[in-house]
Image (tube, rainbow, N blue to C red; front, side, top):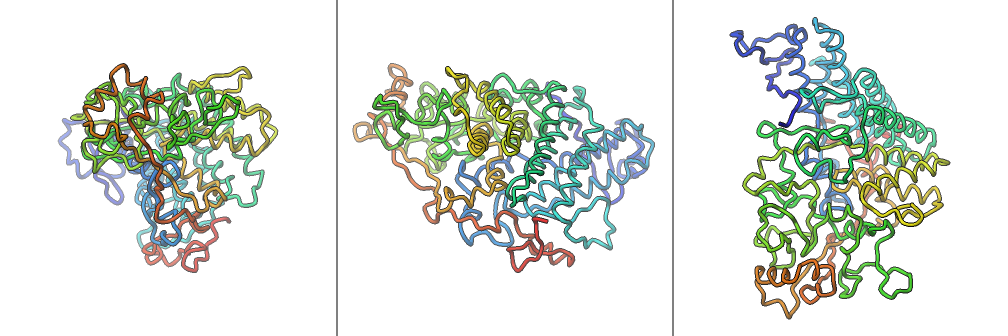
Amino acid sequence: MKTNYRYIILLLAVLGTAGCSDVLDKKNMNAVTAEETWSDETLATAFLDKCYADNLPGWDDVADDNDYCDDGRGGEDFFYEGQLTSEGGGGPTAEYWPYDGIYELNELLDHVNTGTLSEDVRKEIEAQALFLRAYQYFELVKRYGGVPLILSVQDRNNTEVPREKTSVCINQIVEDLQKAADVLPASWGNADAGRITRGAALALKGRVLLFYASKQFNRTNDIARWQAAYEANALAKKQLDEDGYGLNDSYDGTWKDNTDACELSKEVIFSKRYLYPANKSDINAGVRPLDYSQGATGWNQPTLDLVLAYPMADGTAPGVDINGDGIKEDFDPEATDERGLFWVNRDPRFYKTIVTNGMVYPLVDNQYPEQRQYTYKGGEIEIANSTKTGFYSCKFINPDVQKVDIRNYDLDLVEIRYAEVLLNLAECAAEVGNKDSEVYEILKSIRQRAGITANADGLYGLKADMTKEELIDAVLFERRIELAFEGKRFWDMRRRMMFSEPDYKGYTRRRIEIELTDAKKSLSLYELANEFAAGGGDNKLNSLTYFDYFKTVVVDIDNKFQWDVEDNHYFFALPKRHLEQNRQLEQTMGWNDGTFDPLL
């Protein structure tokens, strides 16, 4: 049975809580005092669990982040010149102001020492709260730079607090995470599985310092910041290794089902736990085609850009040698020779992430022969709700869940996994320099686990003797593939200020549209599916016979505007209502005559 840390519904008052104690206790449950809360382990833990629930991200947040980069199909308010205003937009550009959650955490931190809890219990509760507060402040800082740094419960008559320098906020976040790591255990018992550990605190500290060393915050590329980030991530990896964490045996072993074997596997460092019916997730409903979903759909539809980015099965650059001259031709979805078979012989992670026309989508109640998913025009029952890119994703999907049960799902959201810690360390090592072998070993370990072939040189498709810049690019490329649709790509592009690079100025994302050929256009979906399956669908899908059935055109997703991300988008504006409510706040430079410098 799936375990979970205890979610106990509380009615929170300003200075105290109403909670639950022994079910036979006839005491008024709406009159639990603050003193009782911090003297009773059950009540104090319940207060902490409410803080967990209120301060962790959700799957819908991750899905929104995925649309604001070159892997997804949204984010126009961020990408198009003049579209994003000081009031924010959608997804990760929307107003983010989690001070209610921070208030709860400060309430806990201010009062947990005032009761009679044992020292060990008190310290562990306090450490978890420090982590959660650090997490929220980091989410604020990566959006706005420095923010009001409130570390204790505010006087209700004095709520006007100025923004603190970004550097001070980062130092406080790092300090809180280190304090948490010094107290938290390597793991928890079954009843508390999923709580924050010392490894999670160190991993988040490494991520924070990675961001702070990146160009968004570090315009002069101060190597000392990269060194600090490298040391933090190296320490996180060392501690995680000692505590029994590591890569799972398979790439999808972290999320292929909703059992504890996956959700609490050795690769999971920090996650938000879901448990139906109290706390359910729509991730499987959102990612699936609507034919096999209920209501929620349209999440994580890959762009052609992401699809074509995946390396080949041997880890080398994508493309195919159609002339036998040893030189690869780029894939061309509109071609009717081998260049058009862009899904053949790719990195094994491709098939655990991407679904294209005619590919098997192995759902238990798939209604098509051979369980194939057809995305050509007219090939889906609900054409109005078909994929908008020509592709679906199968990452995070549990194929054994039937459509009727899909909204009753509770897959945990893994916010940090061991593979990310490795990639954080590799990026810092590449930036620091003279650590090439360490970078290679990390990239090779991730590719080996993915199932890429080692090849004669044992480099898993990596170029030998890469320069510093090539190593950095190789790590960033690996991050894109390994962490696809985990909500990381947008923030990576933003912290590295990739949107300002020549490759992304005037950029347009692409999708495909597929139609039946003239010879097959009279076939109904079921006639087509049966004919395609005759003799084995893979024989047709992976050969030039495919083009007897289908023709493809490439279309721009960004067909109204091209990308033109403005410099001030790297730090968002504070929404107007907060400036009006707090006269001490300064607007961010670059927005409405703002004077606050987020780089200090």
